Picture (cartoon, rainbow, N blue to C red):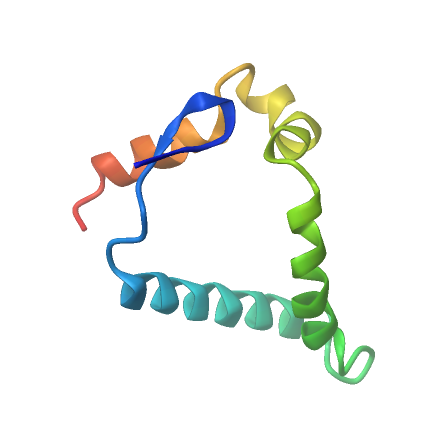
Length: 92
């Protein structure tokens, strides 16, 4: 195990195929959303541009994203804890 942000222990990827499938599913969902919210006629390259911009999000710390988007809703509970709890309670 490796030490992640805030001293939390992180597990290495155990199943790269599952991670790849989840990534594909997320990209399909993003593309469907763009098709509905922003029709191709008005923005034909929006999906590709968004995918290119995703890499730049790595420079923004998880703590900053939590503060900006989730702190007012979740309080001081880290999003990572909520995600782990969701997976632990799901029947996968």
